Image (cartoon, rainbow, N blue to C red; front, top):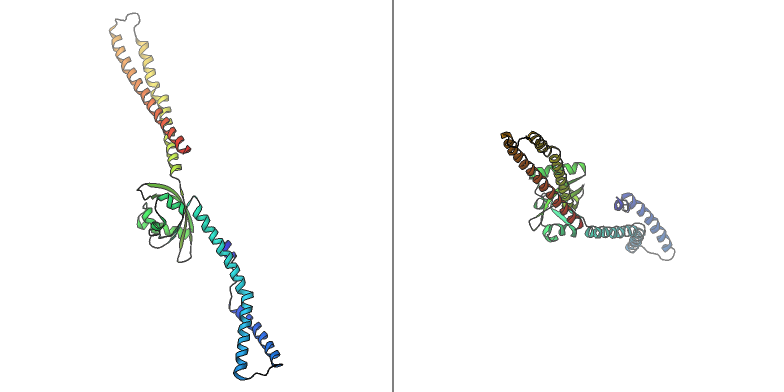
Length: 283
């Protein structure tokens, strides 16, 4: 809107009529003054009148319209150059694509080239489907229509890099109905953030599993062990039932050991996830 508001007033038909009337008055006045000193007739008079009218019209047009237009155009061009410099140096990726040929890339900044590993020349020969194949052709067409209808949209997608890997990007796209339709797209690499989020969810799941084991499965074998200990005949260790109780104690102890090992393993996995998160945040 800033550049649009800065546009000069257009030179319309009414402006042409007003300027012509002013020039005709100037031309008539000038010819009256010339007739006082020089007598001209015929073709020479016509040529002189046409010259004076053309000269006055050109001078008036230059001072009242062209100079204003040129100054405004120059300022707008400087602003556009500044915007392009900002887009080239921002850390987020930026595209301009058409709405045809599955979003042919018309402009791309340096940041996005670094994200995916392609050169600018390579990307300008590609379209969105060459990089983002998460949607079928019909789904992409439907998505395009939705963005055109709403005027803008934000979503998360995955893009293919030149090396064959994938990055997760947060996409913010705006549609403008100029030059048969254009998509203006900002792309932020959120691969690290998404991985950290998945690791945090995995940590929470591990913590839940450990809490469940400690509150339920650990208690059951402890209760069983305590019950078996109370059943031992301490007055007569040769009691035949003591042998069965001891075997049950062994079985309960092995079961208890397996649960403890599972808790230890999950604790180690939790510690490993925490180390991965810490290293990524430091990086």
